[in-house]
Length: 602
Image 1 (tube, one colour):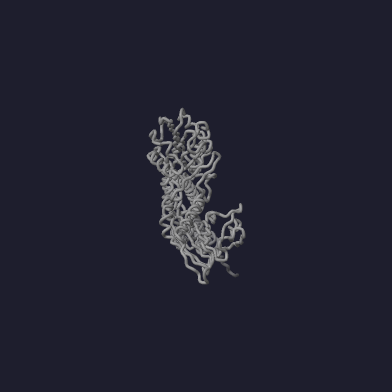
Image 2 (tube, helix red, strand yellow):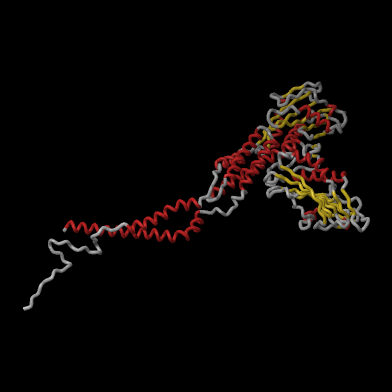
């Protein structure tokens, strides 16, 4: 009989023995940390490099005073800038007139002309009146803005042909009257006796200082017109500069955003085969143009240059007029007169990118179209034989005295000093027109005409005051607009580079703008114009700084798109490996804990 022996099943446990661990659910050894430490170390190295990466792409931004910029913009929009103006009226030869009543009537006339809505650059008006009787007894309003000495102004001194002397004498009388704050403007009304020279004619003259006078007989009988004239001189002339439109336009005056203006004078010889002309411009610059540039120094930094060009024909055509015995070109031809292809005028070396250049051209026609005259729409010939182009400059057509050629070879000539002075005088009139003033020396209104005394500086003192007020307002508006645009741009692009130089320019611009406002409130016309010009220039420099135009700044999305192809694939694998290794470690540790539990139970 065959013996059989039963062998124990290795999978079954017997009493007193330790069960074998199942590798799928348990393990008898503690899991190691080597793989986990390696993966976490690699992951930590990547994470520790993120601050260095962020620092390497960090954009430096200087802190800009956004609150101050918004405050300046809101202040300029809500509170129009106004200048203190003191008006003093003196009535000579008037009897029983109450000065307080006169002041009230003049004030009502001024308010009616200015309207309720005051614009930026207007005046805070302060009016005082002095009445001097025929017996040279004076009565005035209190408090008076000027300590006028009674009897110092005589009726007989206001004669025809003595306007310049009268202007100087009034400046001596009112020269010490400042009104405390701001500029003082005076109007003297002289009531002559009936039957004196001039009859019932009323003469109104505005001097080149800050004074005007109205002379006539029987003015007490037409006192309403006199008060209206006085109010009109104060508002229409001294406040508005004799211009109908008192609003500030975008192209208010031809001054560059950096406060610089280049006056470029060019002498154009159309055909040098006929004749060649030159000029002694340096003498004219020193004698006639230097006072103009000095007078406008608070408004613009003006430089003057000149050149002589040859072979410069015009673009338009001219026709022969048998009646006038000259070639003519009409106002309809003016847009085509300037030949931009042949007239190489923009050759200034002193003008920067934001400077303004005004071109003043003397065009000498060729022998085939000499003499050449400008015919006005009414059929008359222009007295100046010139025209202006707004924001560009002016052109004068100068005909040689003898249009006949003497020989085949061209003659070389020099424009005489007398002709050159006349040319510069026309240019000064065109220059005034480009700044918004009239070239003629008269102002006409509903009450009559006013004679305006011309100044050797091109602009009278009260015209310079108007330019200073309006220019200050325009500069502050432009400064606030530019800084506001810069503020919105910087806040919308958080990755834009803002250097310390830009921050300093913005701070200095705000400081200059506040200084301009302070000077304006104190009546400093020239100082406020200079400060506002500096504020606008600094704001423009900050906005157009080269670093702002750089392409080295970009958005966060662009930064992610640039660096993600280099770091994301590797970083993704490292993170996934670390997660997978951590998950594996937890599973192996759970198996080990299960095995320990079974062991204790067994």
